[in-house]
Amino acid sequence: MGRILRTAACLITGVALDATAALGTIPANAATQCDVTFTAYQPIKAGSHGAQAKAMECLLHKAGYPTTVNSHFSATDAQELAKFRKSIGLNPLLVGGRRAWSALLSRGTTPHLQAGDRGREVLRLQLALRSAGFAKIPIKGRYGAATADVIKVVQKSRHLKRTGEVNVEFWKRLQAGKIIATTVVVVKKPVPKPVSKAPKTHTKGEKALAFAKKQLGDLYVRNAAGPNGWDCSGLSMKAWKAAGVSLPHSAGKQYRIGQKISKSNLRNGDLVFFYPGIKHVALYAGNGNVIHAPHPGKKVQYIKMKYMPYMGARRPA
Image (cartoon, rainbow, N blue to C red):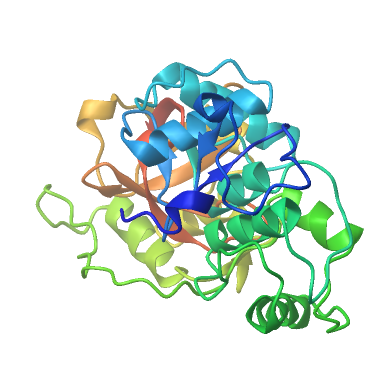
């Protein structure tokens, strides 16, 4: 991942720059800084390594979480990331994407900013918005027309007054991971839909999975069970109902129904459960993937099982 603006590439979390220093001057304690300026920010999880893994470790460490800042994001680091996510009201996932990046990069004070401002706080704002997926935001530490235009886009999408200025409310939303771009302009290689290695059959599990696939893209709605919004157990309940099997609208109760299945013997449609206390349920979709309704603000989607703490699986029929 290419770095930009190397002389302004370091954001110091919790350490103020000399107010008289020109933007981009490298301070004496540069060795303790977090190098966080990238053209695009990738999801970080256990096993990630390199500059962006180190940046995530460093930001978490500055936020008070005992991560190892060594460019190798460990399982322990991922647990600390989950704690940080939970502390700001996000689902405690073991992976950090746009919400985690922007929340970490925007931590700190909440100054009012507007066109003409410049300095460390403007750079902090720009880095947070770039990591949130706003690719057109400049990373220069100067609040010009381009920055104001991005702020107006955010304000419009959230039905706020389009002032082009940043106030306390804007900062608080950014620091809670609530401001992310709905579309991110990046070049991606086509990714084929997950296909199960198991032979295609007309089992009840296949029928349940087929129903779940039709709901991809629907919004998560708490306590909902269709037709256009779902929570996790509402989706699994209706999917298996389409296969002729009745289930309760509760992940915990669904966990007590049917045959217990080992991870190595999962088949399409099997119910897979996550998080201690059985807090989440999804339908197995082959190749280590599941279909699930994640949490508020997200849509029904495919996700790798390894991104969530696995607790067990059941085959209802």
